[in-house]
Image (cartoon, rainbow, N blue to C red; front, side, top):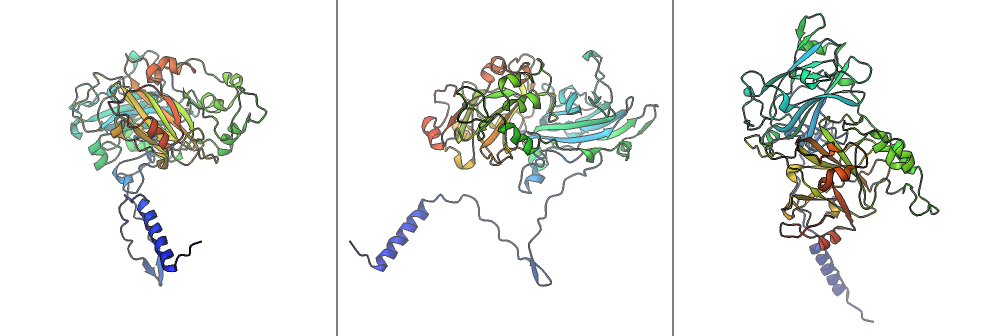
Length: 509
């Protein structure tokens, strides 16, 4: 048995520690700025209070606090968005309004077309959308243009982007030809029938306004201009802020109680005695599957609760065929939604692949609006962990996602520590953060992808919105239906898939 001297042992230990230190990845993040000396009060050092960043406008009685608000102000505070609820899109923001408007009354709003891919006004009642007024259908004011129309100047100055719309508490005419121009028919779908709920949305604000301003798109928010009463008299728009009308601060966030979500996946549990092929809920993975399965959202009873029920029970909740947006989460009537539940017990890396719908290019301040060769206005996908709170983890929009020579996209979903080296845009892959909050019931491996298709072109028949009956998603969407595959870890993905550049032959996962 050899005996090393203390000096030699110390030298060997030092060399081992140095070798280990060199093997560690170098920190790429810049050094944190030195913290200023603490304020002293009566000799007590006090922890500093963050300065924060003020909103660049006043949140008043009409528009409530923005949901999923982005842009310069909030990013300066260290996070991208505000209330990331309702399984929001990472580049979609909306401002809610809630007020009393009696039948026969008319509220006029004046505003400016934003520098964005999409904007709209939607009305709601009982959680279901009732009407929509989308950007391209709004007639501009005299002397202004609508930048959302084919060939229009997208960078026209604010004074040439004006519009005026009217909100009425009436159901839309049965014949669309009888609709009044620039009118939102905001009749609530449920009592109380005099409370109107609006959402003003913007999707994917252009780069320059987003960097200089925020998700409003480089223009002010629409404002109430006048209120016409049932007796014919006209009041200033500020009348909508009277105490008996203003409801903006009485909004609520729709949530599913965590114990309710837990009860779903704890029902019909898998046991050692469960026969092979018989439905049951695995307590770790339900309702995720391997390979991943995607379905259109047809409402909470069928599309969320129903995922945890045996097929014969779920069939009783299946809605009749319809292309209308389902009730729940105050969705956008111009959208269709597809969900994919994932669980990292099947693999820490997921590849999702499908044909990419063509959309206008707008983010890089493109000067002219062009929809001459598109399939739809916009599409995106986000990852959301907390099923009960409907908060999201991350998201991707169409202009972030590489499209290969065959017209397909590749999206890799993983936690940051499990990200494959080849999951980069330069390798033809868009990476989506899995998130780490789980589903808010203690299951941290769960996440859900929510796919969004917005305003498909009339000739495009393979969008999510074209799916009218549950179970026909793959049949209707064809190559545009996302197909997924699990990988054990990043190393397996890199070994089997590598860099998905233009020269690599491809197939569906």
